[in-house]
Image 1: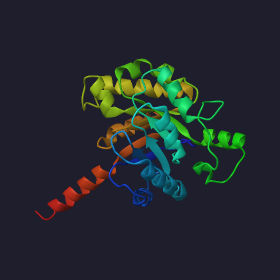
Image 2: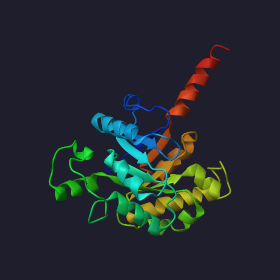
Image 3: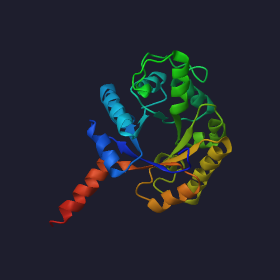
Image 4: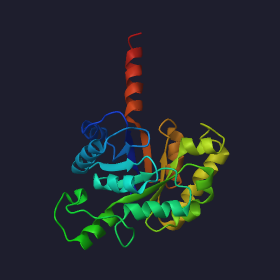
Length: 247
């Protein structure tokens, strides 16, 4: 993303092992979005997937279930290179997320020795904290009217690296469920994009895997991250299509 290219992620909800990393890499995905908001993965599973992803060159992003400081810190301790925090609605929410995610001086995260991001190499605390702060992402999800109303303030919080639009939840919040191409929904996407550009952070979109033309429009607006869909969706669609061949 730093080079201006689009990073595309696959959501992991079904496959609870390191096999999902190999599948993501073989398929050509840049990132693996490990979803704890709509799933019951254990921390052990998250750790194994994150470690395998880092070794395979697939960036592991973990969406925590809520704005919870302990969950955010644990996701990074598992080896996540980015944590996606749902339902961020105010600049104060964003500051809480950064405080939990980043080591001092940006935040207040507690450091442990031999961090997984450094492949467990021992390192002095200060350079280790600086390196991990620089390498990891804090991603705030914009999914509600309240978040949209405060999006400029959220984007301006130091330490927030990306705003990720939850397209389906945001359209629901605007009383336009599923109408991702509605002018009001498009205007909301554009407002988020403009807030990101004004503050020099990344703009990301999720929930557009079934609307590729709209996803292309978001890329034209400057999106540098997009989710293509979830493992369960890919599997059921492919299974259904193949079953129909025998009808």
